[in-house]
Image 1 (spheres, rainbow, N blue to C red):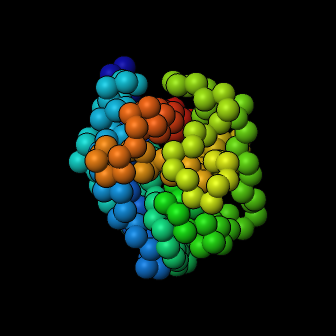
Image 2 (tube, rainbow, N blue to C red):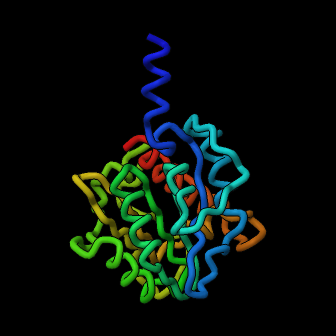
Length: 213
């Protein structure tokens, strides 16, 4: 029986049995490398609070790389331009349709660029508002009003948009919230503890969803 289980696990895509996260490197000139302390802090918070075993040494993976499939959760951020070439588009589509998860967090200024790139990946799908009733807001931490507001951008309510494939949320695009800034070391933005805690708890919910759906 153990041999059968091992053979089954070896046949699965790497990201299905992994508990690792990575930041997405993309072309176009945008600062994909922004918020360098965000994911290490999120990994530590998840390990301490939701029983994950994520390495705090966060990998960088390119949009067109086969290494993408080693990670069940990919995070993308930035302030500026984003360009996915044809290989990037095909690779990201296969990754997301195959069980991967992409969280895009607008660090401010990304919105007008990223929407057209998402459309390249899923030309037959629309970005839909993710309602506050969705399970991503229910646990492990409860957010009955949906996304928390972490940083002010254009004096708008925080927004969660998503791409769904066969009922599963495969791409979450968050803006007017800036969760990544809330995950950074405290001295970077001097956010109050309660604000950073809200950001980390919401981040833990996203990771939990990615790992379990």
